Image (tube, rainbow, N blue to C red; front, side, top):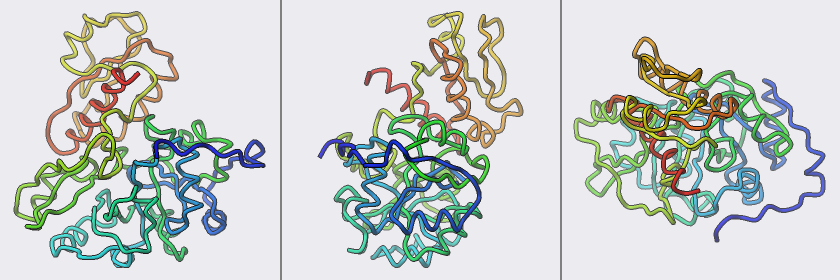
Amino acid sequence: MGKICSRAFIFAAMMQTSAGTDIALARQYLQEGELVAIPTETVYGLAANALNDEAVIKIFEAKNRPSFNPLIVHCASWQHCLQYVQQVPAIAHELAARFMPGPLTFLLDKQAIIPDLVTAGSSRVAIRVPAHPLTLQLLQQLSFPLAAPSANPFGYISPTTAGHVFNSLQGKIPYILDGGAAAVGLESTIIGFNQQQQVLLYRSGGISAEQIQAVTGQPVLMASDTTESKPATSGRLKSHYAPHTPLYMGNLTELVKQYAHPKMAIISFDKPVQGAVTPYQFVLSPSGNLQEAARNLFAVLRKIDELDAAVIVAAVFPDEGIGRAINDRLSRAVAANKAV
């Protein structure tokens, strides 16, 4: 299908985007089939009634998102999730009891009530319970789940504040539910299961493979049944999460020499690069805390774009816990250099 073409809505040019904490207003817009940006513990999502095709189409249009890229469904509780899926492995219940609400998404066989548009024609749906008090209150007051990818133009850096959403989507959506800065700052971990009920990792995120393994007692396997042209879940495209500024990732000492420029931006983990001649140095966590680094990553990438830097060089982060998710997002941003 390629990309869904943007339709010329009669009053689209007149739409005013506002932000606030009015759950009743957010609920009203969603019930009327409109879009609302919602806060989650991971990033802000662009939400619509997941059971309403016309509402879901608006998500693809607002983001200019390819229709072959599936969405994640958000529910008020694990019990609510179970209304929309089937053949749920026993281990999924155990993981849900441990991590929900939280930044963990399950890829499970869907019930027929979930539209094919949400899953890009797949028989499986990605589904989760977000851990944000405002959005949980909103979901509890709705009679339907919410389909919600990140609230940003497709391929760009995910938003972690209401201001990020406003800057990207003002005039395209009526309301942003403002829940403050995202606590995690990276998207949810997405997992599925094979026939042996072993956990398959589709996307690294807010819950680490080590945390999952501590519950299951078995290694987490890397999922491989996806392609660039038809990803199994959201966030699986090779080029994604990219700033407008070209980004390179690797050994910072070597990269700083290779891409030396008066407006070079540097992203490091816990200490600045000594001797680097640039005013744009960003240390994501001076204390060496990977959770803090994850919270700061997307905001820093957006800040660098605002500074109109010429190039970004980024460190490779420790390959453990949420550090893997940071490396994943940076590597997909690097891939965007080749996609241009």
